[in-house]
Length: 299
Ligand SMILES: [Zn+2]
Ligand SMILES: [Zn+2]
Ligand SMILES: [Zn+2]
Ligand SMILES: [Zn+2]
Image (cartoon, rainbow, N blue to C red; front, side, top):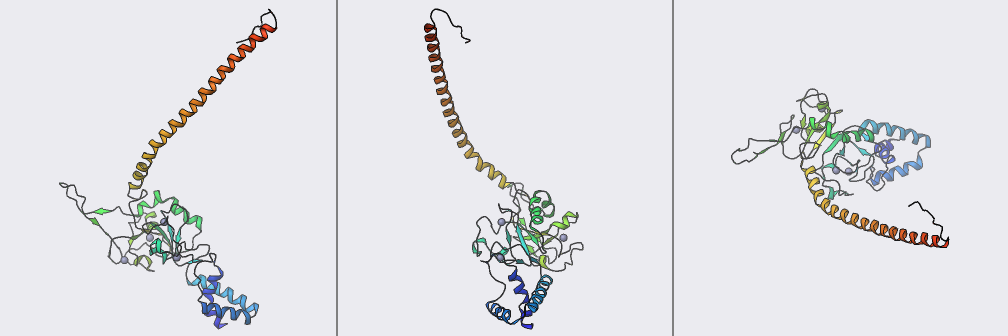
């Protein structure tokens, strides 16, 4: 029984495994021990130990039971989970290790995702459809939580924009050049921007902001503010200019296809014309056959 309790948590995790090609939670030695224990323990003891292991697991750390990491296929996903805000597909989730690893180095690389994508961080279990809502309302509700990029005073004479000013972590006052975490929950309560570095975002307590609750608030990992739903217009313009060229080609194609359809209609009309003349000839013939009596046709 004691031996089992040493591997209870990884065993409980492996019981919940869904993606079988991902890594296991139990080490090979633990697996060997477990298969030996399965032979010697009574079914009743085993059921009790398994239930106890489940409980211990739930108390140890957050378990996203139905979610697996799209980078390494570990399932279920444990601890923090990052959901992508920018991938074309609705669901793309990464574990706390894969989120900081470039996509091409993932065990299961996905070309749609990029390490530049903004991600929502969930530190607790949340059903998929509820998590999806955070992606759905990103245009409306994410922007207030993220400060606009700032620049030092530019030179109006040369027209230069000035130097990009890095965001500063509220807690440790560190300058963050590339990515930072912004609290979405705080902004929903109209509190000032809560901006944290990658270390402070995971601290169980934050001294600098009173109303920010690290365990229950939802943070966003911001890596790119130049997106349509934040402060960029570039992607939209790009889309438009990308569309512009094919549109002209498309129009030419459309004109061509319309022309060919007109041609067909013309041909049909001609055929109808010839049919009408043959009809007239027929009518004449019938008239002649009927003798001198004229047949009136409603033409
Ligand atoms: Zn992973
Ligand atoms: Zn992505
Ligand atoms: Zn910090
Ligand atoms: Zn907060």
